[in-house]
Length: 392
Ligand SMILES: Cc1cc2nc3c(=O)[nH]c(=O)nc-3n(C[C@H](O)[C@H](O)[C@H](O)COP(=O)(O)O)c2cc1C
Image (cartoon, rainbow, N blue to C red; front, side, top):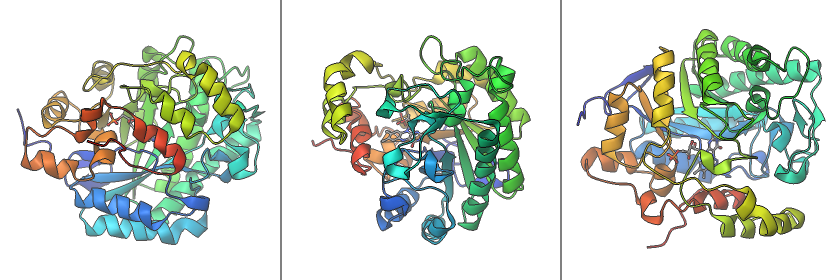
């Protein structure tokens, strides 16, 4: 087992991390009314104090209408002072700070933003029972520019990196996926057309980052269902992102509105998802259909490794492996197979000092595995909390 790489410094574009660990974006739900709270600052401070190389603030929308949750922030100037407090706190603990920027597209919630959801094709979606507006060309241009504006604010707030969310069935991913993109103009059809919005957003992001902060992109290996984006197209998107000047890719998969547990794996927390649902119509629908509609995916350590290795062969830029890492042994194996960084979500939701623990005890296995993983942390996210609910 090699131990030197994990705790050696590593670079992503202009940024150098103290080690190879990244706290993967996992929605904290700690921005009531859209404002980053003290709990959000304390959570990331404690992940930083726990030894992480870089922590990622999850799922901040680039515009108000891109929000899914009422405890979700969007990048407006009013939140910069609170975010600055967060980045200062993380830096004081010796870690770097990144922020994930995205747009919910057809999963935007009008009750949260007061705005109608938008999507590539304006098709009805069961997620939130939304009938979104089909985006016009000027909507597409405006949202691409909003990605750039969000990056400028992230710089002002002291972030060392941004992570553009191009996966999981959110807006960019809705353009990439043939399942949600039924357009017949220059934004739909061939992959070259479906990737056009991503290229436009990346051009704005790169310009705003100006080589001063690192640009990571979270992208799907595959959507995880027939009719969605498959692995061969996922490889092509990775190559395009390399050409577009991404500094690193974070590899994931799945589509929240179709295959939500493809990206997490383990036990599907049907009971908790139903009990935390506040919309009565959706709740009744879930009671009737959740076991039919939400597919289970068995957990194994490093479940995306085989597919992620295909990307490793296809591109040269730094790659962040994410998905099912809970032990030092597997983390070392992943780094030895050519990935520059490892990302972890549930291990750090369960224990903010997981990195410290594996540094001092190479046989340590995350508490997260003791429940299955049960994925109750995913369900409780809908209540505006980020914690492990497992009781020993
Ligand atoms: C509670 C929770 C919330 C999540 N929220 C996000 C999110 O906001 N954005 C995102 O890209 N991924 C999100 N994820 C997915 C994780 O970043 C990660 O890709 C996935 O959990 C697999 O990594 P793990 O096995 O280390 O947990 C979330 C995961 C969990 C458990």
